[in-house]
Length: 214
Image (cartoon, rainbow, N blue to C red):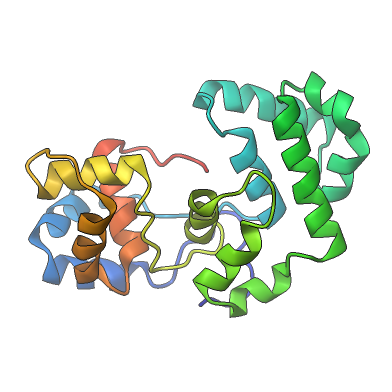
């Protein structure tokens, strides 16, 4: 668990400790960590903005997602729940969103406004409890919730076993390039406890040195 909600750009205080622990117990991880000495996980900031951006980016390219996001931010500069509902379906569609994604954003906004997600309790709640709340929102599945735990709440021990990039990187680094399933990844992740988010982040870096925004 963590303290208060993390502002954008905040770095996890546990990062140096986690790096040392992972490097001591895992020679492969030690090599990857040494390859990326000057970059670190940083918080994406405001929960609503982070989740809205995740929805916008689903199943489209990074470039296309950025274009849609820019138009959305122009239409609603604060990117707040009230602004999203105020835009209405037609205006959201004009920003480049599909009808389904526009509905997802409005559903997310309603959950924030009516208090059915307990944003200010999240720092005191366990990972699975936060995930259980988030997946009640249309358009948010477990993977999106896990990305939120890592990139917004800065939770240290998340292992997104369904993430294709993580599976690919683990296969290359630990299994001679063979395909890795969720059970193999969980078994591998046991050695990284309680820093599985950090190990995941470095495995992503082994595929793409530049951090991706979720």
